[in-house]
Image 1 (cartoon, protein in one colour):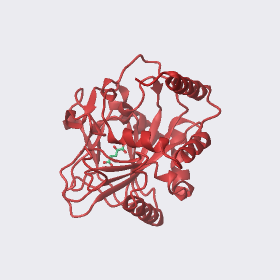
Image 2 (cartoon, helix red, strand yellow; image 1 turned 180 degrees about the horizontal axis):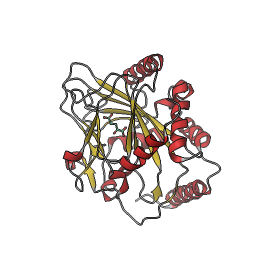
Image 3 (tube, helix red, strand yellow; image 1 turned 90 degrees about the vertical axis):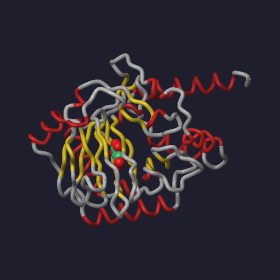
Image 4 (cartoon, protein in one colour; image 1 turned 135 degrees about the vertical axis):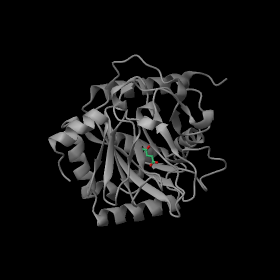
Length: 301
Ligand SMILES: O=C(O)CCC(=O)C(=O)O
């Protein structure tokens, strides 16, 4: 797969998702698996808040119900040097236009014999409502997936509506994952089993879900997100479900940025990944710096 046909592009924009066959080679999947295994074994990103459980974490990173390692390419640069990333970017450019660029990647690991689902959600619900994110997400399972081990399911056409109401899973404010609470019928879901090498692509607003994994093996996946330069949202909207959350991940982000030795690599990445050509990013950056200065001047209570 290096290019989509016109009808595949049309289907993506009609349904909000697409299923593609034979995208990743066996060698690429083997590399993804061994990198994912190593990073998860080493608990890479835990202290920086990049490795977390979708569900309440309890005491630490042991035995997550659904672990997400965000930005594994921060720890293993070679992930983005694989031809797979280049091929996926070409497809993203077909869908979004020539300005589409890499945004982030993630490993998702659901252990064997778990009833935990990836709840119905729109990825956009996790974002800042003042910013418009125009993104596509490539999801590669690292073993065949079906209903038996938690393949992806999508609600066709859900990307054409608004961001629906969400809340933390089970109403628990310590839960990292969100679930969509109303505005859709799960009976409309399209179930997407995939063979090794296949992937799904979904838009940032497409409602999706992955079921439990009662099988004997963990269900693993690697995702890559590509997007257009960010800009101010033309809609006036709020995502109140992101307020007043009590996330252990946020605490770790905060502590690690203050810790000696972690701040400079963080700043280096920010400077390296900054989109210098986008005036909106400069405005966001200026607001952030102004906020930090103001905070520094306000005496602690
Ligand atoms: O792998 C999963 O269970 C969830 C993946 C997902 O929600 C995503 O890639 O947006």
